Image 1 (cartoon, protein in one colour):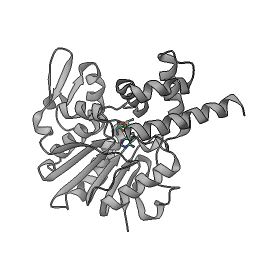
Image 2 (tube, rainbow, N blue to C red; image 1 turned 180 degrees about the vertical axis):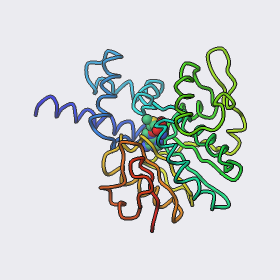
Image 3 (cartoon, helix red, strand yellow; image 1 turned 180 degrees about the horizontal axis):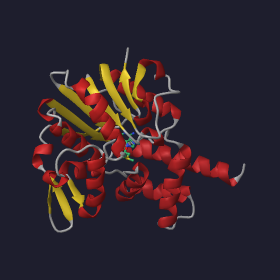
Image 4 (cartoon, rainbow, N blue to C red; image 1 turned 45 degrees about the horizontal axis):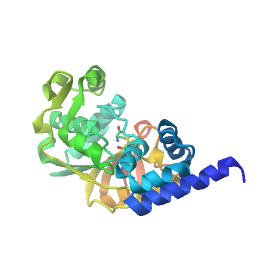
Length: 274
Ligand SMILES: C[S@@+](CC[C@H](N)C(=O)[O-])C[C@H]1O[C@@H](n2cnc3c(N)ncnc32)[C@H](O)[C@@H]1O
């Protein structure tokens, strides 16, 4: 057995320990990426091997929390992929306007930039008041930041540009109050958002959604876990409900391919058809 195989055993044992001790299930994440994240922490904290981290992981909760942050990759931005939001306005909003009441689920919302972007879009389209948004993530630390709606001012220039490219109709500065080094999102954007923890690997369905966004999350899962998550989305969507995935993700080549039609293929916007 070579070193690589031994490392893979160490990784499996570490993921098993995380699951048994803390209930987070990373066992079906894409191997290469999860291994990179674990090895990054290993090197940073001066451990000689993955198994050398095992004891600390089991007995030091704060070490586990650090590793959880490393492993959950919370990179996000407002109006990420502006073309996607532009397509949402152009091809989906008119359909959403046909429903008397809307339920939207953001699965894997990270620190919430995506959710505030959606809230802004819905306000501008006159849909916000009849919408309930559920924003979930498995990581409670990032969810707390999402709830606070406080973002670093250094990214505002890019967010403003994204908003404009996404078809924003107002001045982006209407939606936040700037303080010294951060901005606080307008309170009215939060009124219809419920933030809660939900793990796509272990938790169940959310009923009767009109639209589900799960962008840049499935990319970290292996096929089996992608299948589980897509099953949750299928079961949580009403017929004719929309599913939005990230630019590198697709419903095609999955077992659910036949149950969704393309709405905007290149932006990964699909609609449940059965
Ligand atoms: C790269 S961020 C994507 C954020 C946002 N959706 C976007 O596209 O900008 C991935 C998020 O998925 C969350 N995540 C990873 N595995 C998850 C799981 N099993 N259940 C729920 N959320 C998960 C992570 O905590 C992280 O916040």
